[in-house]
Image (cartoon, rainbow, N blue to C red):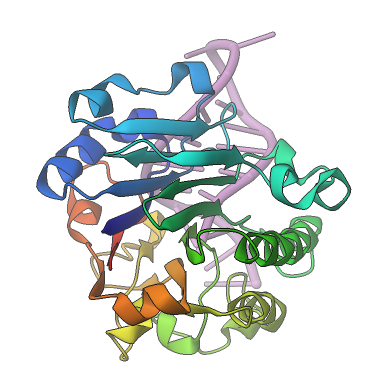
Amino acid sequence: MQIATWNVNSIRSRVEHVVDWLKAHPVDALCLQETKVIDKDFPSSPFRELGYHAVISGQKSYNGVAILSRQPLAEVNAGFEPVVGTELAGDLDEQKRVLSGILDDVRIVNLYVPNGASVGCDKYDYKLRWLYVLRAYLLELQGRSPVNICACGDFNIAPEDRDIHDPVGKDTHIMASPAEREALQAIAALGFADAFRKFVSETGHFSWWDYRTRGFRNNRGWRIDHHWVSAGLYERATSCAIDSTPRGLPKPSDHAPVVFTA
DNA sequence: ATGGCACTCCCAGAGTGA
């Protein structure tokens, strides 16, 4: 089974890229983030023509997640509330960042973790609060069937210094601050492993490059798009690879797709 | 130290991303 994740920075701006990519990489499921479109305007037809079903949870202008899959997903739910309840979810589901469904023996969880803007600001606090609820969400899912979970998406956190092109001084930088990394590690400690690091140990492998600094041309990037998988899935994983090719196309997303195979 | 580019939407320039 192949499960891919790709922050497309507007699905309507990226339909051609995604269609072309799926033709070359007919993965079983593709988790999209930052679709930036309300559900009724999501461009489902080009993907249907490729044989993909779409489940979507979108909003106007910002955020938005979707899962394209060759087979229909079972037990689909959107947001934190259906899993953790209204009290814990609070207002977090107003932003559409969580979508999940079951494919064969795997529960796929598609996540768009908040950016956080800058360390210490309101959005940063929101990000940490969101990660705290995400932990409760995944803990609850672990108690359900199936036991295999693939939590993938744009985490907006570089887990370690080797996931940043130039990590010096980044401990006060968004995506690398100690509190963000600790929140991610608290999630990993539930029993999830970063599938990419089963296969690649060295630095220099990134999934996001800033538009503004010719980051891609110089490979000044960050690895912030991940597959955090449960133990059984980690054991049977045969590959986890970043495909940087689409990042080099005209009018690209600033993120590249990442493909997990198990 | 700052800003840089790309996207969205009452179509102009602000908000957001990371």
